[in-house]
Length: 88
Image 1 (cartoon, helix red, strand yellow):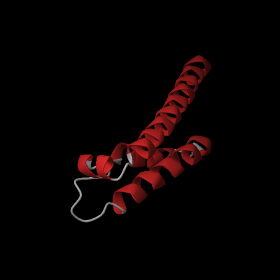
Image 2 (cartoon, rainbow, N blue to C red; image 1 turned 45 degrees about the vertical axis):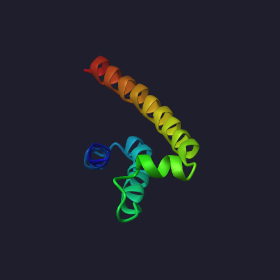
Image 3 (tube, rainbow, N blue to C red; image 1 turned 90 degrees about the horizontal axis):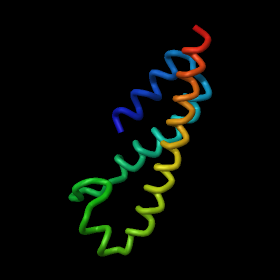
Image 4 (cartoon, one colour; image 1 turned 180 degrees about the vertical axis):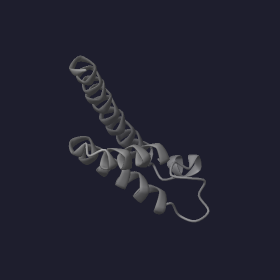
């Protein structure tokens, strides 16, 4: 979560607007999920709560969406890096 927010702020400072806007919703979602953890839980993915409430399917869906997002970002960053190396 810290790395995601840090990279979002670095994109804002370096004025990479497209990548900043791409990272902003995920950073906001991570902060929201961290703030909304009920008192007494171990974290966002409390192992006992996942199985007791049948939340495993929703957590798996969220994990797959984040995996797709990070895969997309990887290829965008890779393209940006190659473009910067070629233009130098």
